[in-house]
Image 1 (tube, one colour):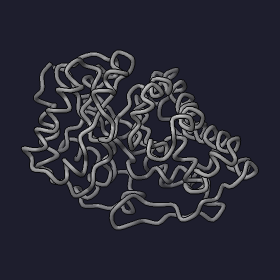
Image 2 (image 1 turned 90 degrees about the vertical axis):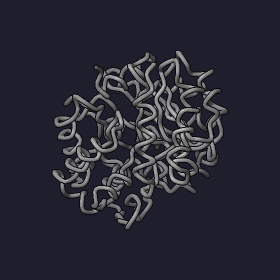
Image 3 (image 1 turned 45 degrees about the vertical axis):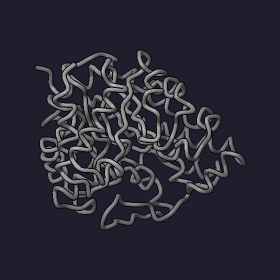
Image 4 (image 1 turned 30 degrees about the vertical axis):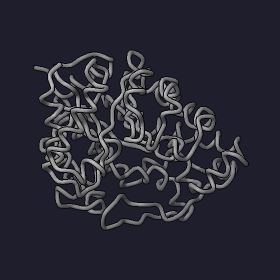
Length: 346
């Protein structure tokens, strides 16, 4: 009998496991609400974060466990504290940055990557990641989450300004995304050296709704390739998710070198299979709000089966929601989402 971890690794290779592999993406907000805690409370409590991840993993039954989901902004905040940036915790939703603090190439030169390891929250998440791996890493694939380099760069600079700079200051944008790729490699290095098998990257600002294929090729693909090349050289996988409709640039996901790409519900999954099958693992793309939040369990079952029928019967595929899930989805619907895949034998 294959473990969930082995199922997902088989899909990463493009193969067929004993059943359809299945995972949420991130799910920090849902897990925190279900466990009855908050981002702020967990941020300085390693043992509680570990217990939440382990408890929720057994309840949710995803093949991948994501530690640190919702804490991605701290990777920019850690470097920004000395420039006046702070954090804002919210009642529901991930903690946010209070300031953007990089506006020029001179500002990039002032950033210190080693500030990552001085940040108490990053330390909490990193320690929790390795402890979760120790406890359940034989059963599930344990990963830690981050923003992709393009999204992280936009967090430093401010999204609106960053979008304008892709036209007005392209050299600055290229430098900034390259810096962020290096920053993320610095972050993951000790974890991968200690045996972490996968890096989980969300790059929503590289969405098809925000940048065109040309901008994607110039600014978002190269830093992702830098990260995935590094991970591959260390024997680690890269899981990538980008929001929005990216159906006009499917080939570019192969160029990123990432192990797998998880698609938004706006992407035509049949077309994605046509382009990617046999070249890279892919996952998708049950709508998190329209289906998982708003439909009945029977309708969730139907939607999941449809996605598998279209894209998942030949292996190299993972059943995933089209994005991170709202914290208000019922457990009944979440259970049904997983049950469909867990019971779908090849």
